[in-house]
Every structure is written in C-alpha cells, then in structure tokens.
Image 1 (cartoon, rainbow, N blue to C red):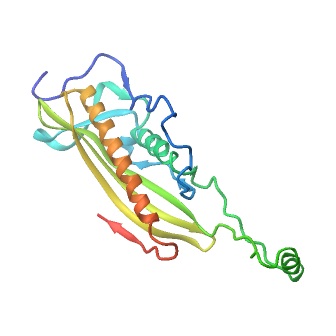
Image 2: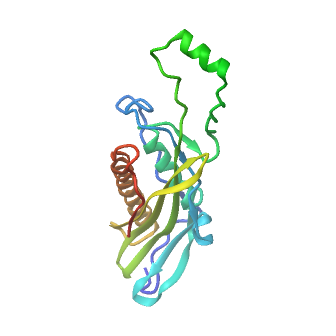
Image 3: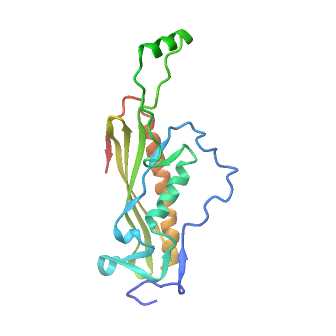
Length: 230
C-alpha cells in the first residue's frame, strides 16, 4: 500500500450489506407490535451518494476531498442500500408504505337520513372513525464514506437526518427531527474494511432510528409537539 491512498481490492468488486436475515422464524410478524402505518419516502442524498461509487476521504491529506475507489463499488447507490435496511427493520414492527401509496379516507358528509339509519341500527355504538393522520418519514443521507486519519487506520462514517411529519387533509405538520451520526472503526485499511464498517454503522443508525420513532409515538395522542434534536 502506498502512503497516499488506501489499498484497492481486485478488479470489479461489487459490495452490498449482505443478504440480511436468512430466516424470518425468529422475527416478529409484520405489524405485530400494533404500531400505526408509516409512509417512507425514498432516501435523499447528494449526487456523490446517489451513485454506486464507494467513497473515501484522506483526513490526513485533504478531508474535504471525496474520492471513489477505482476497482470497487456498491451494488446500488448508498441511499438505496440504507433505505432498504430502514424499510426491512421498520416492517418488522408496522406496515410501511412508499410516500403517496396510502390514501387517507375522506369522511363523507353526514346526511339526516344516514344519521337516522346509524342511530336506528345501533344507538349505543358511535359511527366509525376514519384515520385522521398518517406518519411520514423523510431521510437524508448526509455522509457515507470511509475516512482515513492515517494510511493504516480508517473508519466508516455515516450521518443521517430524519424528519417525521403527520399528513392529514389539513396539511402536513412536523412531529420531530433528528440527526444520527455513527463512526465505526474499520478492521482493514481497504475497501473491504470500509464496506464492513459502513454496514455496521448502518445497523446502529437503523436501531437508533427505530428507538427514536418509538419514543415519539409513546407521547399520548393529541399531545405531540414538534421536536428537533441536533
């Protein structure tokens, strides 16, 4: 390895995060926790992170310069890889829809005849309530690279910004916003080490994101107020 750049693997190496859980036997059934449905927007990212390039930085030379490995790449853009992991984790807890894929049911305007029919049929049971709002999760991948602070030492660095909103017929309102940042030391100073470090960092951020969502939803209905965490 030269002292100016990290080692590259053999020609044409393609990486992803692995197959994930190979068996669903130990995983909870989708929606088993009873959490409400959530819309997940495609993860946004800069142009550099919207390509399959495997990026690194040499902090000891010029940390502001983002460089791609010449002989290694991701199987798809990192924003899509992270989005897949987030969706897979959240789907173990609740139904997850692509933004715009789930329509809110608009309540029909009651008439005197329909009200009389409801009262006559079951005077002790109120009319059914329709969903008033739907949670929408927006994610922005701000950093996803292998950072070398020395030729033989590096770490995977991931920064993700999450914004949770509520969508209703009245519009969309902010529920909470938070940035997640994880640095995971790489075991080897090459593309393979960076891939494994970034995969582990992604799993940590996904777990933190799920905990944050659970915390926001633990607030009693009707008392949610916008929360922003740096």
